[in-house]
Length: 98
Image (cartoon, rainbow, N blue to C red; front, side, top):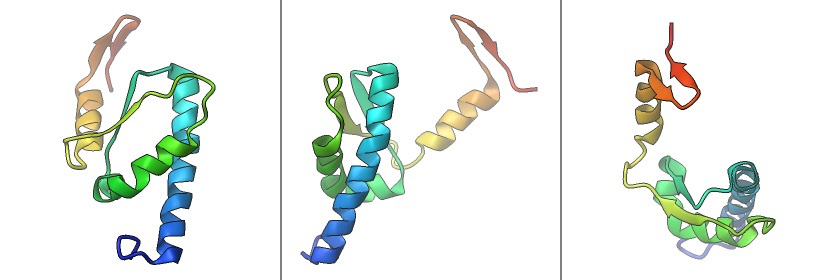
């Protein structure tokens, strides 16, 4: 509906972008990343509507990172969970699930 110009749907997408910008701002302040990669069904289906709003409303305490959409088509959470389940090495020690 937003793509068809419905003002209420466009307003909702703007609000959703603003809400996601708040969370993105928290990540920027905590980690100062160069790139943030988004994945999941909502953002991958609506990146053209949400990424510009996130970029517009992100806090500017630090230089904003590049906001990018993943090419994993929603599989990033599953891939991340599989890495954690298998365990991995970090500079601070091993992460192994028991």
